[in-house]
Image (cartoon, rainbow, N blue to C red; front, side):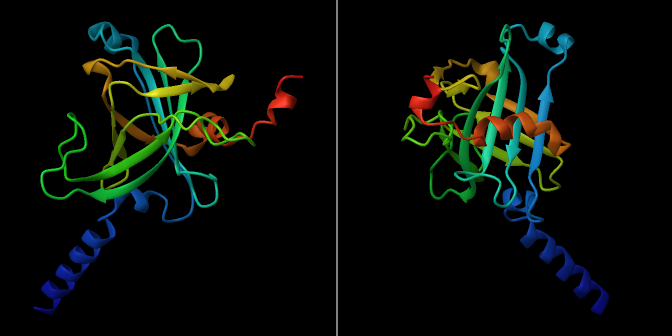
Length: 203
């Protein structure tokens, strides 16, 4: 009985610890990275899919001034990725609420996103990047990303210029795998590196 009780206590403790898998990802204070680069064979079999790669960086403690997440995606024909930043927190919906058509679970990391990263001394665009849902696996090894059909993002070279996108059904749900955090360095740089004041940028 004592062994069974101890086992049950361990299981319950594990369940409580994973009640918020989003926070569990960075409980040691360090950032984490999830990434997917689609192979040519996959893209050939799915000609309507436009996204060729996606990377999600979850910031560690004190790594990001505003929000906790950066996302990058590359599309067919793009020479460089597009970025958005956001604040993603684990939430549980009530009653008959739903997140978006592709996501029917009642709990997930809902993200309030900004098309223009908060990196400008002046007030930047208040335009939202569009709904994003992150669904990390309990073991932290994978993450499913759900996007709205019309997100707004920016390029690194012109982060003040919003790029509106239109995504079809093939570009709405992505399974990413955890990788080395250094693989997200380019995302971290794009969504956290401060820009000089506008008068300096015009010189």
